Length: 379
Image (cartoon, rainbow, N blue to C red; front, side, top):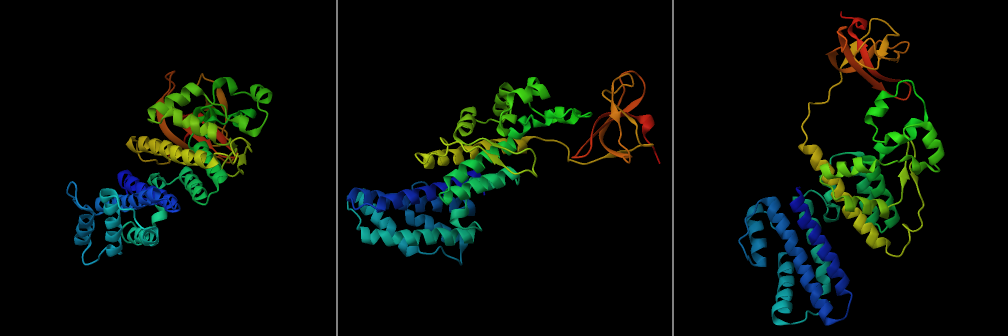
């Protein structure tokens, strides 16, 4: 489903719940509002169904025309509850155009029928229940999609704290983890790859600064605000929305994917007063932020990701900082390592021949730099 279609279905669901709130009243005006909202909910759903089925609906088509055209498209099947939906539309016409308030006992049963209609039609034509339809499904398969899906599930279950926590975790995975300075606590011999991929500002990339300024785990996230603002602008993300989510959600941290999440128990952010409205805003804003980021990714073009490696003539060959034999030697390849990932080769800067750019990073081994062609074996 595309974003336009999902928006129609989400509008339909929102109108339905608004109608539910109004039907609880015994006030005649509120009951009339409930009737109009319920019919609008059905109409929005039918418009979405028309879009999915590529049904051309004339301008100012009557409500019954939507059902008629859809049934023609899906023949010999038919939409369920046609008579009930037309009864709802009759109540709405009498209310809106003739000032006749619908009887509450006549309107109330239609809520269950409409919801059942949504579910049956959704399963038949969208392949999922009506309540499962979400903009989150437009995101690329990823950890942040799963976390945002969990945030949405929490919201639907009225677990607003869980919603806020999972939304922030999604933001952390997509943006914040690149600003994790904890890696610079250790003076590793070969940390070029860390420096290359990290977005931590340079003033914070040292053990002394971190020992003086980090008081709790979430302090390891140190933003380069100018760089982040530039990134948000390039991704067409509303920076106001990003910082609103940042302010409304608790700080979170994990040092790597294998570690447990740490969540700051910020009492003001979990205060029951207004938490529903905050969670609703955060869920919507975070979804839009991640959708924008994904759209930018989809538009970007690059070669397919493949892994290449070079074979070394022996163990313990030098790894240079630059493509030059006169540059600093960052270290030697570890014992037992005779194959290393490489993504390109290039002529050296001092006319000393060909160099291969190598990189490898895991828990036990970090290699980054250049190896001279003489150190390779060619079978």
